[in-house]
Length: 129
Image 1: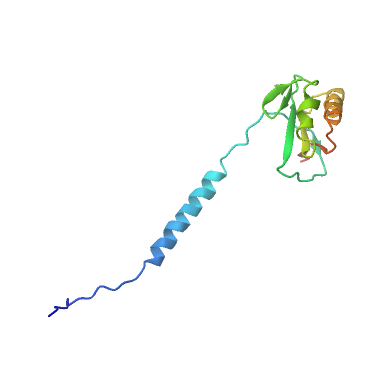
Image 2: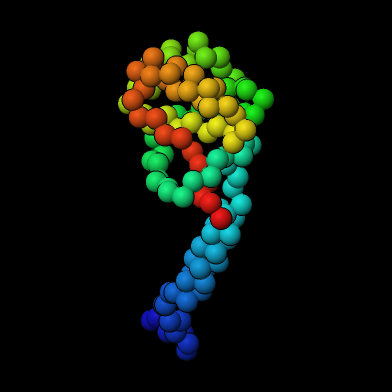
């Protein structure tokens, strides 16, 4: 002797509200991801008319206008570079030299990379305006 309720509840899934939530999350992540700042040292790169993209698998060597040499964010000397490059022979070495750095200093860093077995050397530039 079961009594049936007068009003039956419909079983449905609110897909529209779920789509709204997903859209809001997508907008949130798109807006916040553009404000992520790349860590590193600030250098004014030389200008060039040609450009080529470099993959993410790289070693970054920065030369500041004061003559400081950094691998990543760690200060290194020219004698340390070959030993550090030996561990990363197959990776691209990206040299980010300030535009006020002498060519002689940039060549010394490139020679140190080659002594360590590095063969893929790229110099970072900014596009001409």
